[in-house]
Length: 446
Image 1 (cartoon, rainbow, N blue to C red):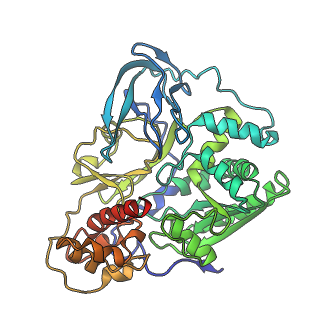
Image 2: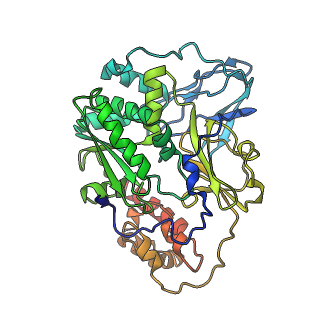
Image 3: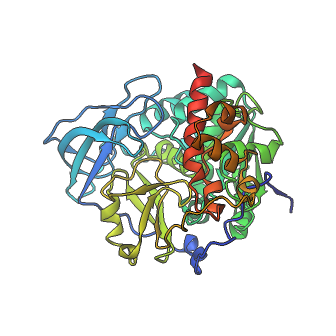
């Protein structure tokens, strides 16, 4: 069995105390979390924020649109609970951007909106109908920055891509929502990928899965044989990837599959003729095509070195602190990280909402190592998947030499955090270098 990967990076099993928590992805997902209230920011995606279309005091139902698109790169927002709108206010996101947000108090009745109905023979829907459904659905990339899925499909079709890649390489420690979907709801994921492949007019559908998920790999091969009759004009393929971080990043996935370096600012669609979608995104597309259910909930992984891991299905907008109140061991965490343990944002206050791109909550008891001078060990160079010299970039940035850092290729930084994680001196290399990379890319676009 050939295993594909990129050079460098690191293997998450090295130096990470999982304490036997690797089995939790194969446990049944916890029941749907029913929060007391939710807060739905109008900006949970790349692009323009949505505009609230509800009023304070208005009754809403599950699947109802509460924010409409406001521009060409915008998506609507829907509610995952039924209840009453109790507030519309300005809200500051974790990335310091501001947008309007709608607060809804749950009536715990879970009343469905009248538009949520199961479709007969959804596989017969035409691409134009699926395109309109995706425009309404609010679905975005759920494993990355939240690029609107409908816009990505249009771009892929215009570029004439031939391959759709389903990215199941959730390589961050403690995150396993995508692999849970492959394990428990594989047919749903494949149906979503089938709908997307029809819309993008591709003939090849490639699932990329880590080599450690042997049961899921075998299940995929069996499922492909069944679905070949449903999608006779498509070829389903599975590619086995090494369990290396950060294999799930789009640029590194393309490098592993095609041995092509994807330069900063370039896309797979116009470089190798492929379009990449996340497993959770495919599952959400299946819900929209089959039941007219927009993106209103997602699976998040709750784990770390303080608690046995769990995958929980939560309405988007649920507050992190209310979720963690139900998790044994959460109170002993020194840090709560929203997203991946390596690339996520450390919360100073857990009263923040889960959004469409939130993959998990990592609960970390271990303290950061003490900060000491660089020992020139080269670990950060070995870990950097895009070939930077993080220690040198960090030193130059400390003295303000941003020009030399840009010449060293800092614009290629993908903000994966690998350099900080492996640094024995405890230096936060990734934060400094990632910000310099963002500035370099902005200068390159201007």
